[in-house]
Each structure stands twice: as C-alpha cells, then as structure tokens.
Image 1: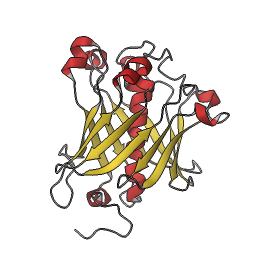
Image 2: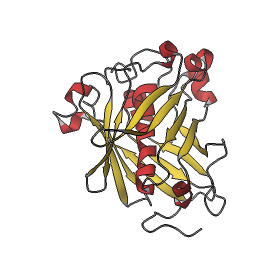
Image 3: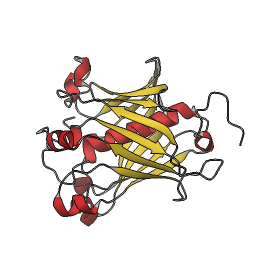
Length: 250
C-alpha cells in the first residue's frame, strides 16, 4: 500500500477506516483481587477483526505505569500507552502526565495544571497531537489539538456518565472546532449490567470521516484512552483511589 503523504509509518491502514473498535482485556488478577493492573486493549475494525495494516499487522495497546502510582492515584494516574503492531513494532505512544489537581471541569480553563491532558506521538518521539480537557459547567469537554497546539476538533460529552444508570451506550460527540456540526463520536458501549458492575474491562467505538487526517485519527485514540481512565476505569460508582469522585463532576 502506498502511504499517503505525511502518514506516520505503520498507520497506513487507518487512512482506509471510518470506524474502529477498542476492547479492553479482562485481567483476572484485577477481577479476583481488586488491585489495579496495567490496562491492555485490542484495536479492531468495524467487522470486529483486529486492525490490519498493509503487511497484515495488528494493533494492540498496553499501559506502562508505576505500581505505586496506580495504587495511590487510581484512575488519575500517569501512564504511557504503547500501541504496537503484531510484529511488536510501536506505532503510537500516548503520554498522560500526573496532574494532582486535575479533575473538576470548572477549573480546567482557569489553571493549566488542573486540566487532564494526553500527548500523542506517531512514531514514538514525534508529537502529532494533544487532547486537553476544557472548562465546562457540567458535561465533559475536550479539545483536539495538533502538534503546534492549534485547535482541530472538539469533543462534547454527555451528562450521564454511568452505564449502570443509563443502561445504554454513552456517546461523546466529535464536533468541528466551531461546534457547528457533529462529524463522529467516541462511544462507551453498554456491555450489560453484570459485566458493567463486575469488571473495568470496557468496549469503545470511534467513528470519524474516512478522509480525516490520519494524525487526528491517531490522536482520537489518545482521547479514548483518556476518557476511559477519567470516567470508566472504576466499575462501581465510588470514589477512585485518589479520592476524586467519578462521573460528571469531571
């Protein structure tokens, strides 16, 4: 496959997609002990097949984080997410810094260190974009920025953040930056009451225009990981390990 101009190596297949599915793997140690383990995700196409590149490679994401930080900070923890193909070649890297005051959506615009952020690299070492929490009164909002911090898109979340209450998919709308039109969405998919209450392993989907810049598509993966950690990492409606309540207060 001929790589489009400006396409980071290993992301050629993403240029052909307008939807991807992300399935978090169930960790039996976490289920049995309640101890936070490093998250792992399978990334698939709309048919449920693992996303293949031009050389039949698959995408798989694995978290790298410090056990003590996971224990102390829970879902607010810093991490590096490594996205690799089936040859174990890393094609995307997502960095989330530790920001102890981050959380409340009211302060995200007022104090830079109080906004949740991730930085996305493709290939590793080359920044292609950022995801930054934006201040709001209630619903979660995020900006999708390019490598120069220029705004590209916005994400507008819903008011209800609990599958256990909503009993349905939870959609984060992907908007043009002027918010005049919706061009896609990131969805936390309803898995059924038993699974929602018993495990943190979540299923997500992302839809976007086929012709969206592949760097922005990769940055949206970073947005998905951030949304998962902020709102869905804990399976119950209780404060996370850092003492910050989950749900629409973010």
